[in-house]
Length: 325
Image (cartoon, one colour):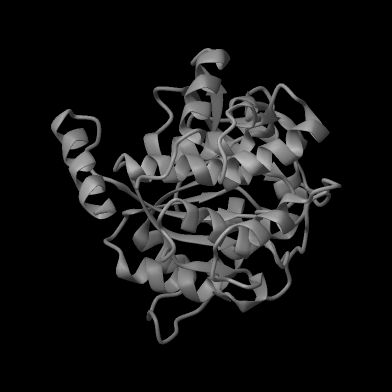
């Protein structure tokens, strides 16, 4: 019945001109150190319910034991328990939340249904990436990464295998339309998703064969969301629970929305919300970065266009979305 109503809603959206064709998207997250990942995944499911995106996979770039279970909790809550989940292997970060007291990364798997017991139990993200990409039409997949670049490094460096005769770089160039990343600080700075694995970040910005669009630290740090969730009184929601546990430790007016901005743009594009500046990002050994504007540059970054109050309301509205039943 839920699928019937989802299909009916999608037909209405198409008839009204709200969607053309769903974006085929892989969501790559470091779910655990901060909880804007939770808000971003909630936003992504809201866009999936409106028929704007087809979530191909959700993968963790973080080895934290509860990262994948938390992803599974959210996918299950929104009625999509069968979305593939995978996690990074090899040399990679293992970062848990810095929040104390009730730690949301431990509480969500205790409170809500899920199948994944531990991140280590998941499939290798490299295998899942190669399988998913090989099955998609050419130049059709958007990847949004709101965590470390470790999975993308492994994919880029991978060789031909039983899944595909193409190297990782060839497979990316053939199947991926664009990469959208919450990373970096512009015009210069030192940002978490880059400095945790700077070697991976440097490889991606220099060798990735498709366009890369960056939503920098300075974008999400000016958009505070979550207060409406915390004040909503909604029971039985892992999204509400997360913000209710964490906002009192941060800022009762809201939390920075770094990952939500990248996810929103990955699905809907930048034009309604942001201006875009072309250029080249350079990653230093310590994980800091600089930005060189260039109309012919290989990269692009977001610049504010929509008033921040309006953009905040739009993002929080999507984060407030309830699962379709």
